[in-house]
Amino acid sequence: HGVCVDWRRLVNGQCEASCARDQIYKPCGKAKRNTCFSREVIMDTLPFQNNTPVFVEGCYCPEGKILLNDHDGTCVSVCGCTAQDGSVKQPREAWEHDCQYCACDEATLNISCFPRPCIKSPPINCTKEGFVSKIKTRLDDPCCTETV
Image 1 (tube, rainbow, N blue to C red):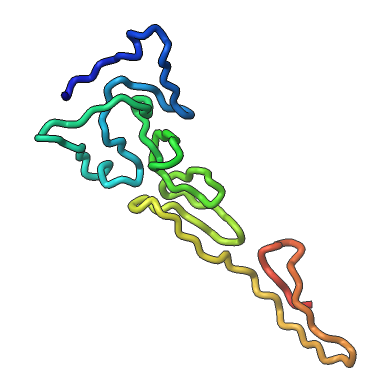
Image 2 (image 1 turned 30 degrees about the horizontal axis):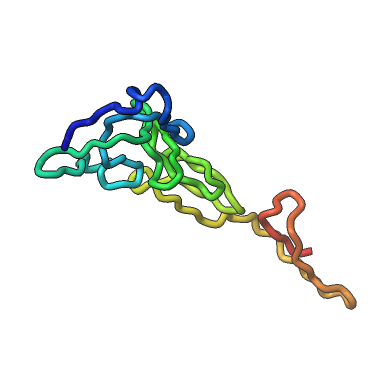
């Protein structure tokens, strides 16, 4: 109990460990793998058993990197926000997505978005007989409409 043994090295490659993506195998690592979204990153606490840290073999991020989250195995150098398209955005980074301005909140690593404002079209006075006003997508800005 409490002793790590690198047994895979002793069996001459017959039981190789394979790790996903950019993770590396360690015969003895911390049982609790910190992520950008876990409380452990902030509090720097580890699981203990009778006041002794728990260590296990497994796949870990290389030194200087941390897991982005619990489920996809992506290791990152800096914690950020996962955008709508799956890309990782840096804290305080801003971008446009689906006609909205979005930003990665540095404190919470949450994304906040708000509609991108559109330039108001001048009012159309459509009083001629047989004519009606119509709303259509602007040619110069597909996120906005104009009355023609």
